[in-house]
Amino acid sequence: MIHARAYIINIALGLGVLFVASCGKQHTAEQTVKDFVAENLKEGVETKRLDFGDLGTTKHIKDSLVAKMRKNGGELYKTDIKYGNVPTGEVYYLRMKYLHEGDTLQNTFYLDSELKEVIAFK
Image (cartoon, rainbow, N blue to C red; front, side, top):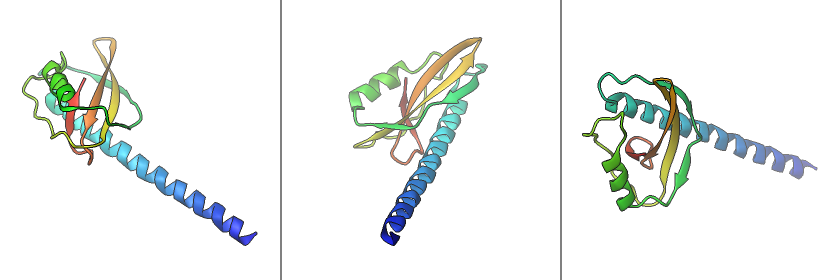
């Protein structure tokens, strides 16, 4: 009985630690994207953020796709954006919905493994 209780407590603590770590990554990613958007929106463009999606990871981002996203950019963003380096392995992504002139728009931002730099967006 004592071993079962200890087992349940250990699982609960482990899940709690994962939850707290996940919330920290989400917050860091959101702040990185907010800073990127503030720095790279064209002059005079005003948006109102609605919501961020959940932070996710993908292995399907290759250099050619990053180059294409960087080239296409976004209509509301500057063209001379400085991006972070493309990491090897998994890349984080975060979707942001926002209002611009009454329209609800969405961009997906791809971040480096430390969540400190945006490497591309679409």
